Length: 164
Image (cartoon, rainbow, N blue to C red; front, side, top):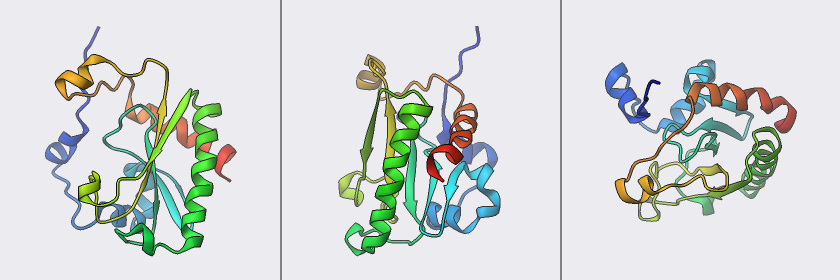
């Protein structure tokens, strides 16, 4: 059997493609490249994109098109829209994807742990009982047990049923 080490952070090095500026604004402005950027959904307020550095298979983010690092400056309507998408997305992950639970979170600012601090975003992380193991704790390594592209395609097919 073949062993695969999942290392998406190497993609930039291998493909020599570096996004200048805010990666989320780049995704927002390039709707014609949704498939390559792993966008699951877009509307006038937000978009949903797969996390390129997932904690578990199916980890994605809800992101407002508006570039801001301050949740408190986001219009209430946009926040409510993000929340409604999160609610529908939880149903998608549980019913359609088979998750037994979901973590939802936002890391605001670099000090708050945000990897991309300049643009607010909400993480949805599907969870299963016993989906963690010792390697994460002792080796600072995540094991991604399935193909990223297959997961993207599977969730993309669920979007019309759960988000429209």
